[in-house]
Image (cartoon, rainbow over all chains, first blue to last red; front, side):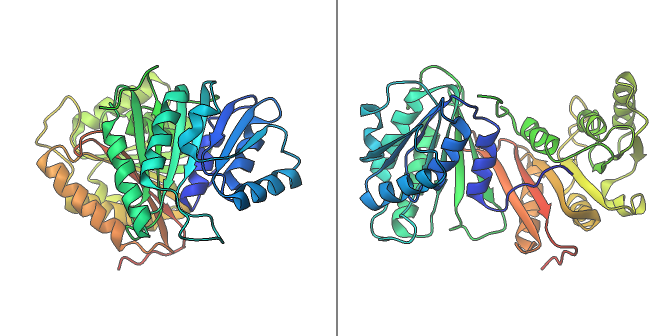
Length: 196
Length: 196
C-alpha cells in the first residue's frame, strides 16, 4: 500500500486539495482562524500564486500572519480583516479553490462564530468566483447550536445547486456521532451557476 | 489545477484506491459483475499481485474472464464461481483491499441481486481478512427495494464498528436524489475487529 487515508475530515480536505492545486494557483481561505488552512494553501500555490485570507477577528489575522512569517510564506498571502461575505469586494480574478472551515476560532471566544447567513452568502459569491473545475471546500460542525443552524443552511444551499452545474460530495464518518464534523466539496462544472 | 475529482461514485472509489494500491498487493473483488472492478484491480496489482474475484452468476465470470483476457491480465486473477459470503474458504492471506459493488449485474436479470444477509456476512469476513490500514470499499444503490434493505443493513454494520478499530467514511452527492448510489470506505485500524 502506498498511501494512508487521513483519520480526520480536515486532513482529508487537505489531501484532496493537495492533488488539485499547483504552483501559481489563485485561492481563498474564507476563515483564516489560526492560519492552518492559509499556511497549507500558501505552501501549495507558492510564490507565484495568491492566497486571499479573510477573518473578522484581529487575533486571527495576527496569528495567521505570525504563522506564515515563521514559515517564510507571507509573500503570496493577502490578509484581509473583513467578513468573508465581502469576498467579491477584494477578489476579481477566477479562483482555483476556496476553503471554509466554519465555527469559532480555536482557543478563543466561542460565542464569536461564523453565521449561517454570512457563510451562505460568502459561499454563493465564492462559487461565482471559481473557475470551472474549481473546488469549494467547507468543513461543518453541527455540535453547537449556531453550527447546527449553519449545517442546515449550507445543506439547503447545496440542494439549490443543479447537478449539471455543480458536483457536491459529502464526506462524513459513518460510525461517529451525528455532531461530528463533516465536509462538503463543491466542484464547479459550468461557467455560470444559477441558485434555484 | 493538476487533477479532476471524478463525477461519479464508482470513479471516485477507483481514484482513492489508485492512490492506495501498489504492485504485488493482494485484493478481492467481491462482486465481479462484468469485470470492471476486477480489471481495475488487476491493473493496479499487476503480475506479482493477486486478485480474487467472486460472482454467483456464470455469465459474470464469463464476461470478466473475457475482459481480462482482452487486456492480457488474466494471470493475476482467480475467478471464483461462488457467493462472496464464502470468501474465507478461498482466501487465507491478509488483503490490502476488498471491493463491493452491490446490486444486480448490469444488462442482466434484475431479480438476481446481492442480498443484505450475504453482503454483510461477506463484509465482516473481509474486514477480518484485511491487514491494518487496508481498505474495504462498498458502492450502494438504494434505488430498488432489495438495495434499500441492503443499505440499511450495511449502515447498521458500519455503526457496529468501533471508531478505534475502523474508520468509515461515507461519500455521497449532496445534490442528487436520496436513491443515488453512494459509497462507504472502511479503513481497518486495529489488528482485530469486534462487531459490537
